[in-house]
Image 1 (cartoon, rainbow, N blue to C red):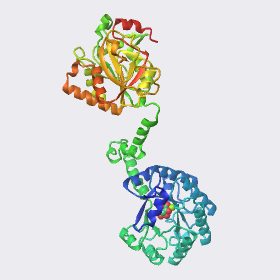
Image 2: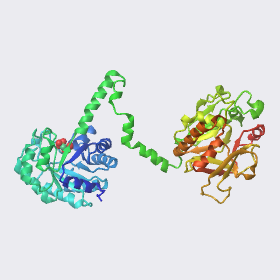
Image 3: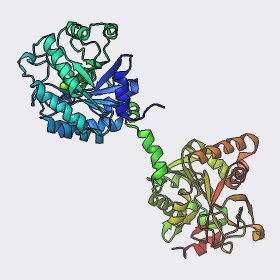
Image 4: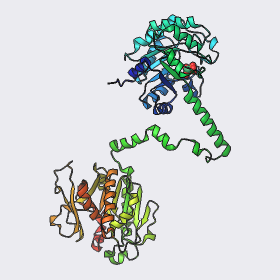
Length: 535
Ligand code: SPV
Ligand code: MG
């Protein structure tokens, strides 16, 4: 089994016979991109991090600011990071504190260079930069090694001997001293346009420790040559930053010139790529798992196409769902209840009196054949909305908020409210038989719907269905499948949602939220007369 620790992986990467590539990154996003394209390890470049922060590579960003950046990079990725720790930000004491802080952030290793704090980038007046005293620098390495608690944490000693204008001998003398001080690898830096410094060094060094190089200026040397020389790892030191710089400049210029986005849209990454790299999908999944209520993702489909002829003159000029109860149309109360539990996306299937159903807080779909079809047909017309979690409800009911909340928090695919109190309600209603009759004793037990039918003989029923169900994303899938099948095999226009529920009980678990009252439905004049008492 391979070791999952990032430290162990970085150690393996520099010790293995194959050449390793460490890709520069300077923030969480670039680190993710590098990992995403397949790099096995990262170089947290001091130059790039400071440039991205808008400062010079002269320790203008404090070491804790660098630490914050590398922490984001580490959190964003699984591959190991080698931090460019500049000089170690001081003497041996600063290095050992740095090592401890890096270990805490799962940064796999640090590279320190034999210069003095504050440093300057190697490509800026390199020859004028003083090198550290060898013994003092060895003390930094030794203190770092002594401070690490994970034996695999990697400390790379970087010699700037070539950069500062010293020759091969000084580079070798320093590298050997650093090896003896406990360094795990040597980074030999050169700013020549050919790999001649590296060639000389590698021949003399004879693989005493793994060697890491940074071919920024000798980029034209074939990578194969580094393999032949026995280099352990190549750092592509700043190409993420430099690539982004030009890309940004181009896009900014274009937008500035055009005062429009029209010429850049095709040249920039789609938003979906940004979200993917941020791991937005994982959060959505986790929200489903951990958030106490999943209501925000639900969409409600309210079936409100019927006139409600049973209500006689009351519904001559307006649909049943607009009848006022306590001075408020039923539909307004129902939608208000859904909104209160976080369901904001509401679709109403309109039919009779549709011109009166044009509220600002819902969308609508029309069932223009409402006079000759039943409610399942309305749902069928709204099948395009059956995607993801849904709440499906009749438009002529109002119910207490907690019933909707309970329904939405059911873990299964499809769930219905069943009222165990059969005393209230009109003659003909939707009756239900469940896996168990209602009892006070089944707190936390899952009860399932077995059968649902429309009838008046309550003797064989455990309760009545008020006309509301909730389906999670997977529940909605089964529901849609069943609905489509019913449309193919039966006369969907003459069916009711209870027929759909009945079919569903045969195919999937339909959970029951038992209640005793807490809702009213308006089926006839007497229901409506009673309704005013519902507060
Ligand atoms: C860095 O990437 O910050 C380095 C490499 O230290 S170089 O810029 O080449 O010095
Ligand atoms: Mg650097």
